Length: 410
Image (cartoon, rainbow, N blue to C red; front, side, top):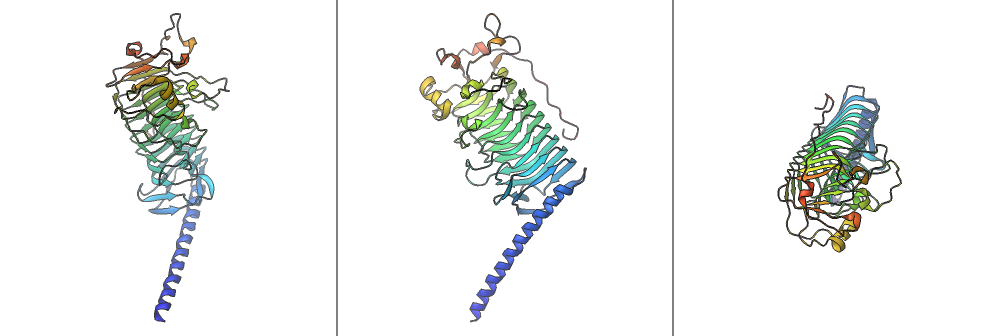
């Protein structure tokens, strides 16, 4: 009889404890939401130590000079695994000079942290991740600033995104540094963006390590003046788990660096190690075989300078999946000896002189890369004249200027 009373009391206590925890979580969510809505310009939102299960997005709109600060990546964890409304974990829109730092955002339905139309956004010491095995049902983007200016991402980490872990799109004046991307489809992606420096990062174990893309159908049409340097880009051989229809679903597993239809890109002083399919790929948009309905879109890569990188690769077969995988299986047939740098050879005739040579400033220049073999696969002519003449690309382009951000970030 005494035992039964104790058991009943213990179960009752458990229910009370569970109810109090649920109530506490609901109170924290209301408190966080209130802070995001009521914060005054120039103030700091301080998030306490703890793991907080939130069911709706936290939204900051129309604010200036705000810092959203946790107690540390391992100490302030916002988990959205039971998210019921909204897609993002944190959403920032129409703001100026915003800093998000020292916290973790997990398991959102959509993007972990999305920032739109903001002048001056800093992410510092932030972890964004989907826990568990990478899955196509994971949200698309970890850090996702789009249509922004003066973007600084430093000492951050992204894991498990079904599109890109660290992504900057349709933005200007960008620095991504000292950060890490692991087990995403795209580790770090710069898309339709101008003036970006991507350096001293680690892109390891993604499908593609670092991507620099220009895509059609976007408001900001043309990106460029991107520098990718001093990065470790290693073993990006994870199977592609992007949902069908996404452009990154076409990225072959085993991609180190891919440059797609963008202009004025410099890739140098990187360690590009054991990416089984492409050490570096330079492609026009025509390689995707998707129709182009955007009349203002420019589909060719020009002004590309790949130099002073170190390439290493174990002898192994490239992927056989996807458009590029089929190309390797049926057209290129390199076996296990895949060249490190692959150029599709598709050129814009308007950028060539009367001798069919590049006009100044539009060249594809590839030189002084340790351990690298270069191939032009002549995709424009159905791979009829595949060439390995590295001297064809032995030129140099003027270096692009260092990206300088606003005084609150540098």
